[in-house]
Length: 226
Image (cartoon, rainbow, N blue to C red; front, side, top):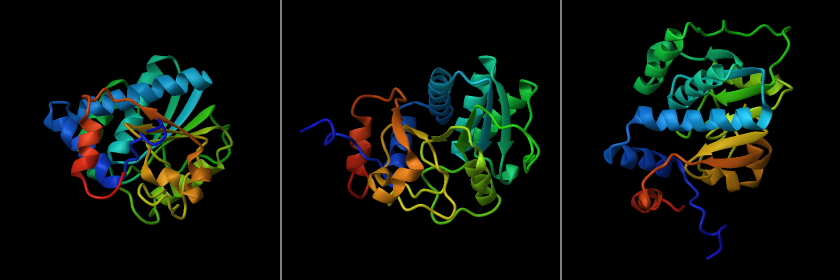
């Protein structure tokens, strides 16, 4: 079997199962989020040496990854501007915990919508929607995606471009056009679809230091092909 054939392509159900198994074995949701965000911040900093980064976060766990990225970039001296898009009362518990950490650092979220006249960042990061998202994004996330697509700087998507269906690779209206996608644990099944390529850009897998065999177990226990 070639290396390409051995890739575990994760769908929506497999991604959920990976997280559930990791937590059952003692790795908390907060720890997984910290590992994901820390690794993504390191990749972004190494690739671009940015002075200014914009990060658009949703209220789900993908937004929590963005908050961790923001914190670690800030600690490296990067100017970070962060937008939380959505109903803050619906934040997941892990995302809310990282939001509190962001506020404790004396930071805040930027007013939405952004000022169209200001100079753009060195990098824009998409943390709006995760693997659980289906169908066309709804306001205000849809407007945030359109705003990100107008940024002329490199765009980095975390886990998958917001608006792209994890399983089918079908782009919603709208979908983030990423230059680079940093995806957790394994590439998403939808990345193989021809229509996904203009949105995913190049992709790189982020290792979350999971126990050996866990990803294979998650794929075997969940429904559908991998």
